[in-house]
Image (cartoon, rainbow, N blue to C red; front, top):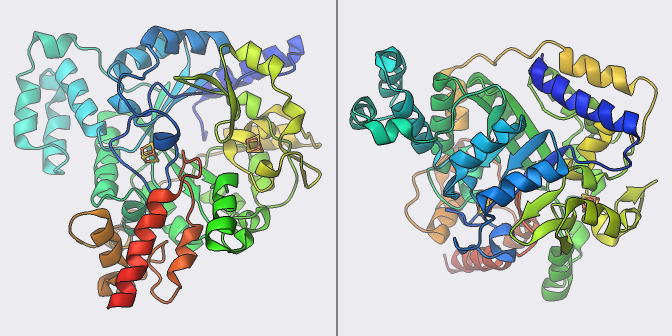
Length: 478
Ligand code: SF4
Ligand code: SF4
């Protein structure tokens, strides 16, 4: 099975319950943002700009648990910001598990190994030695860290920790291979850290998923290589979604640069081109999301947005209408369902009801539509059933060649500008065929404006613009 039986049964039961009760709108996945503080400053990320990143501005633990109860979503995606910075993350995970929910911790991966060391310290006994030895041998923890785990005291043993369970996935943000990913997150070494965290998680018995956002400049071949590599690490599943072309960014493009946004942004047509092979990928790799949503991405059918099924809760309340756009915040989920005029949003029969929705095909708007049967076609239920219950694709064979393809980054010094500039000009980058945003020397630097947003962006492109302007100026000066 692609998705564990107990989890599938839970979600199916939730849908059936609401269908029987004829509930018009209900939550499938809660996107819970307990804080917006982050240790990274990814290019174009708007979450860390739209909201306060002050650690004082957090959703209290009790409120987090209460909103999960309130909306009754069977799945909770804990995101942010970086959720592992949330001081009560362990208690939050434990509380949500206690409520019987399926949890995804959406993380940039940087603090995962620390959290897993806490887990090993809490459960340490001689039975853990084989795992510790393997982790040291594979350089995923140091000998010193292993010793600290062995000497764990009563405080470490009584600590609430994030334990492996079939109800929880680490959901690691990976937007490409090393070269691309480190440029997007604007810090060298993050891809390698993610890989180390994924390897350690698998040794410790956790389930691991990855989430990837596709942009206009995302190279499809690189995506396939990324899936092969992640599959060889025995990652349990992948979420993939097209990036969203934020209205603010389009306006900025037209007014400030005098450019036609169509030249730069991922339109619906472009999304369909990028995702033309998604059904093939779904056979080769464990791609999460319904086959109906995959058909939508591949341009084989239309779906209607069901953003209310993946609501977002954060420090300001229930965010409407969706994870991407903010037209208001509400105190209650039911209040939001009642007060928002939902049929103002989405695309119906190819026509955008709101111009900001025009090119949106993101999973948080349309994946639930596939599961909920909002645009039901004969055979859809069977398709979804067969996909879920079908054999899980086998891990891709690991090889030195694959590792070389994945670890295609360069050692390029400190700071965003030097990193990006060195990456652009690196002969090694050119030689190893990295074809990511920022890497194409022959392109006009303005073309790179197309790389907009991130998995949690809102279209604030100021930092990225500044970086790219500096890169362009440097190139001219050389
Ligand atoms: S995209 Fe995610 S990891 Fe990157 S800065 Fe934003 S919140 Fe942090
Ligand atoms: S179509 Fe996209 S942007 Fe528009 S409401 Fe739905 S999820 Fe949000």
